[in-house]
Length: 437
Image (cartoon, rainbow, N blue to C red; front, top):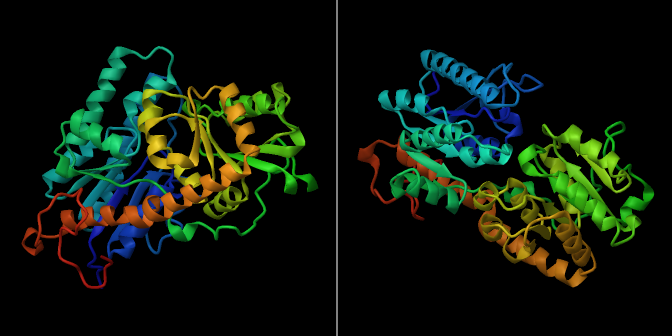
């Protein structure tokens, strides 16, 4: 018997879906609300056909042979992604009913798909993950005006061709309205962050993941149990400036004994090999460890075993306006954060972070040294962080806006009892039995 549940297709090409925790949580939320979900994404190393953590979300993957650096390489990569995604989506539509489509950026090329989807009378949602123009500026020393103009045009088209826009924070929402010309009623904020259930019990002790043999960096010893762990968690690409964390570790070793602390770098990315070389060149192998990519339970274990978290992003247009996923993960575990003073970082961490002006290695090292010696300060920051997470930032709160959006888009107009804006705090459609309010 045919499955009559409404079917949502999510497009993401920045990562394989099994490595994008926001997409996983969105799929889980849609399933829990009574929808079917399929994901189109690049093929991961395991070639999965079902999305882990979900009940039945299917992965429709494609190979990504075109990846590299430079404008032409990115253009070829994104062009191939558009063709591959369009082919997979058409294939799904020919075999199955599709009621709505969501595309996550980067890149900002799926407005083309959006036009087709909307022409067929179905809603198209743009899930705005990154600021592509600002991201390009971060990645190059000499941004070309022509490339920047094209990226801004593609970004504007992505905003304008969508039935609705999901922004990851208030700054992105303001940009969609002011820079993109979007109707405010079409833009809803859905922040990143783990669920309450993903975070282990506060105060419970767990062993932190160690760098496996052969990865380079500090090795686990019996002394590690008494050392403070400073943690960096996230992607390790040029724009993430994780080299500043390694250089801060070099400066910190001059301020306090090396047997008192260690820096654990958890994640993967294009700059990981360079970062390991930098660690060796600066002779900080004894205090810097690399874990590689971690799964959700390993992330939770590491963060709950840490003393301080580090966000090394220096001030830039991209960093100023973006909410770093790692920051929410830190705050969720009550971790005090050391970071540069950035608008959206302050909106996320509040007084759970110690802010420095520019994020230089010297500034980060001094702040880390002071905070490691300030037990009372760390305790107060932990309380603030946990309160902010449990009362506001947890996905359990954010998901309500996300599902409200899809209900509004997929519920026939004659069933709606209220046409209030997407961004307000009330349900915009009648409650459907068996689905969460």
